[in-house]
Image (cartoon, rainbow, N blue to C red; front, side, top):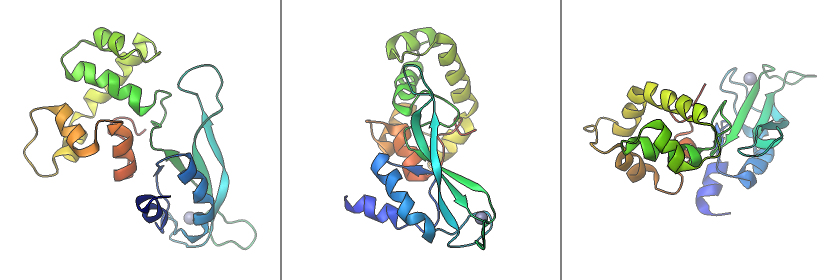
Length: 189
Ligand SMILES: [Zn+2]
């Protein structure tokens, strides 16, 4: 485990996103130290099962998307009884497409392609209808995205550069979710 990963594991409040499966699995040992963001209790969290859902491709709903933790109020535990979900950074909340394929599609429309052409180029394996839905979400979140990417600086002319300068080219939306510990704008609820 590298230094960044160890630093990440020292968080005393539960994260929203974990970088990979190993880090997600390691959270089980950390949860008892977390302070609950809802009720403020420390020491009440325990592992509460895996978060499964649609795989990006193929049938079945058993792809691992994250883990759930319970701020336990059972027995004499002092928690609030609510659960907290930690997702893998490449998972988009309520979507089965993962960050890399969404980004490939976004590169198309950010380059000026229409949704069908961008969809064709991205070869995501999803329907054109899905691509239209992503595009709508993406567009609606424009103000939120600019707020995050600019942070007081002048808005960049090139939205692709604005994203990749900050979050890399490999899988920038996953990088955003991991580093900022928040959902990619437009894909959080
Ligand atoms: Zn709680």
